[in-house]
Length: 481
Image (cartoon, rainbow, N blue to C red; front, side):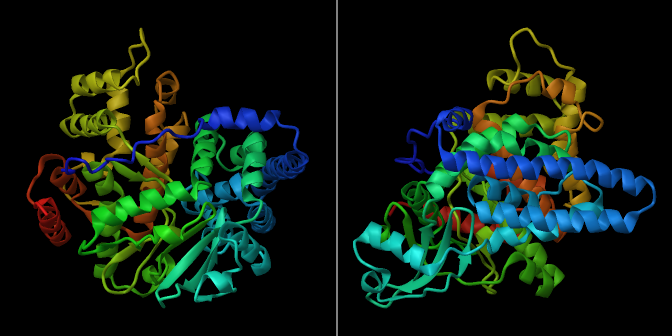
């Protein structure tokens, strides 16, 4: 259980919600917004139309033409989204690791092309990055740091990373916000609706309003590097000395509004690890990912909501280092308890308990009585790894089926889900669920996930060797200083 005060100082007023921000951005007469909107609208419209044409060609047996279309289209989408940064690029990053509702061969084409957006977005010229540092510190990088590498280590949708040394010789990485990205995000918030044809082309039953609103909120959060530094420090304090989870230290005194300075941690990417690790190592790393993302929620009510593979590395010593904390939420106690209550009811197959917790959490509109049997069946599929009990193996097929059950009326109770509320605090949970399902599916992760949940929920005996190590760590952490 989380210690008293674990969330102290972390509750703070959030940004305006994504829907409000999108509306405000649309109302601002920015030339840049119109230009970016035009680019996005053209991309979306042409993609949607071409997709239909390609399906018709495929029905006629012209499979080579169809595959050629998808390969060229995916490359074009990746190039445009990557060059635009902001919200447009974030859509591509999400799509690159979530198992989209597409035929397997077509999905692979898009994911392979978009995967470049995860770790290696187009770099910004080093001189322009140096200008950001000069503006925030009052001096160029070579005068601020003992050493600063002009060649970036990585680049993402909001900023890029450069290795550096502090004047005392400490190795760090500097995450520098792209110049003009705040304005680009503002423009994209007003243009997110332009992405609708593109998103519908690859996943026609997607709940676009919820996705775009959540995307807008997360982008606003990710622009706030001071907020990110605060949350990364919160994670670092809670996991300091952990046996297999590593969080880079934040050098608060060196951080600025557009520059984050943290401890350097090196390691293999998910793809590199999966290609070189043996089966036992892959299973170990999969369990670590699961314990970090879900364990942080259950133990500390802290939720890191961006599980895409560019946000962690594998140092090679059996640990995983988590690097990015731009999308974090602190859940109120009532929300955390509701999440646990839903899982308890699902495990027990108790419809009355499920109904009670969903009503208390405001999921069920007044006067509406859903078909609780169908809803329970959906929840049990959505949470199958925990609901099943015993060993459960994640697969890409399972990840896709969960996404389809949430977005496709042919595969789930969409008629019920559309009539129910989705309180704002729960929006992030779908993103993490889809993302973690996809990652664990790639690794074919297998364990008794229900037993691991019982460790967090009921203080049950550790289910694995990693669980025994973590339980010992938590016991030491709870001891008085």
